[in-house]
Length: 562
Image (cartoon, rainbow, N blue to C red; front, side):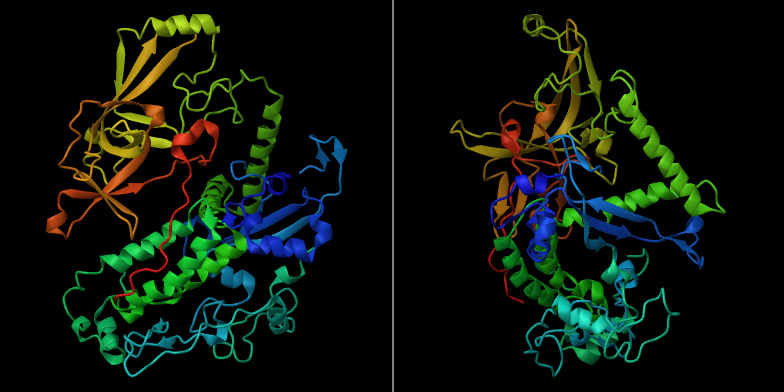
């Protein structure tokens, strides 16, 4: 519980919520609370779902989850501290809520619909209703909007006192029946006072349609987009820039310097997108990325505040509902039974298989803590060192096991043969190595051809998993890097000319390759997209020096050419 206080990061680096400005501001405001690092900082998540997956049902269930942020990122309360053998008075604070955008509007009191949907811009939003599409569209720049020049600065961020001054007189839903407040939708979007002030895409739909093209003609100086068959071809650059923006934003580690550059780049990227897509596309969800950098600066890395883990947990809760007439009670009883059995499992011996010692489904096989994590013989039950060395010296046995699928280090690998006809391709492999003997490490990219498992004699059982790969040429003729967009390309028609196909499976990382479908001059090139392991967090330590968690480099400004 003291991890966040005893493991301070370098100034300007954000890899935990305690590095964010909101946490630091809370500590400055309440020094008595901050003086005890074991006091808990919570994040609250709530989201609703309808019973039995009936979308039109008037009744919905809203589970509430509390997440403690004191623990280190790779871990996930009692008032007795075992490490110091002392008691202390534990206190708790709620740092923020975690919701999707519609649920945010229901919990905060600021409705996220209409022209004033943005909770940052509030009444300063310049959204307008399209004449033909009848949708709300957010403001466009002077090069795109007809007869309109935009020179105003961004809206000012309100302080906590100013926001409280606006909501302190609003009614609470717990005290009065809901009703429409005066000025709603014109002067404000407040619907209630949130209780947190006083705490102890659909398939088959498109925004590009004939009405959208009529709105383009009505509002914007872009005749080449008016009711034509297709969009311009050269749209990959802003699409790439917005993709990299979210990639950097979702990194495990953020820096203040990168966040400042991203904040400068985002308005330029939005302007370039406005030159491409119809105005009906720009609803509040396309407007919100402008404010995401500020939220990351306040709350730290996005991974600690997004909805993905809670959505998965809510999905599991729905499966626990066996009694359809009393869904909440059914979920609570099933969850308590699960927690009780998990707690009781701590009294079992290690030889008893239970939820506590069950291997993660993303990393099959047992793990012996006596071995380093990257050891190729990380199997339970290590014998004497001398006998162990003798068994290895005898070499592997004559029997070889081949596989087409393998789950290791949180990655699910499949051979090229298995992945060929699938939508998801898991055969891409990346490993670091020395290119020319100079000591400079480079990334080797290839495709997995075969998975081989070797067995060594003796006890305990010792196995090694090898990957036989087809490697692409790592030199400039076979690999190139776009420094501006940090895009790596490999020429899949040019293979590595040396015979060195085998690697140890535990040293491999997974990548996948994306082709250029509309560029004939790039038909031989694939874009490399690196993935992250499931069920584990990459950290920097002496045992994993080859794969450090690199902090992304954000360019000062994106290409401003529109």
